[in-house]
Amino acid sequence: MTVSQLSIFIENQSGTLVKVLELMRKSRIQIIACTIADTAEYGIFRIICSEPDRACAELKAAGVAVAISDVFAIELDNQPGGAADVVGTFSEAGIGIAYMYAFLRDGRGILIFRTDNEAEAKEVIVRKGLHVLAENQLLA
Image (cartoon, rainbow, N blue to C red; front, side):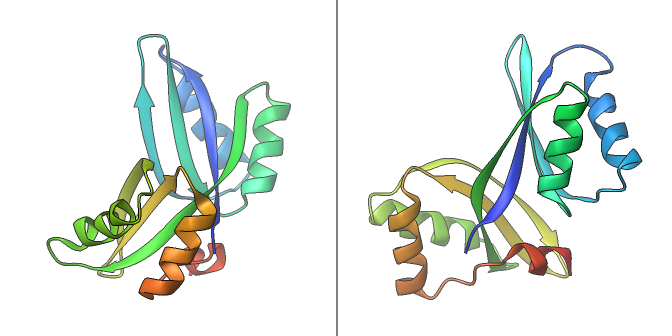
């Protein structure tokens, strides 16, 4: 029900992001979605990719600080308010969203997010009949 996401810690200086991107290219690993959150000293480059376990191993071998975590990928109708409806569903259940990002694919919205309670989030997803994508569906 979840997908693997890499969180890559990079210094806020010229060349560090391109180093990671070049490593992904050299390894022939496709980035499906990404976002960067930054502070004054470093950034967290979060990515969904075609081969998260291999990408993690390749990045660690190159001395890059990286971690894998589970996130949800929910497919939405591409219409105003879709994300608000989904986030509202979790909020009503008392489940917090730690972070989220979104992208469009084939005319459908894909909402990627991490919650503060994965088990309860899974129950809400089933109860509300939300359309969750698996990793192989994100690659299609």
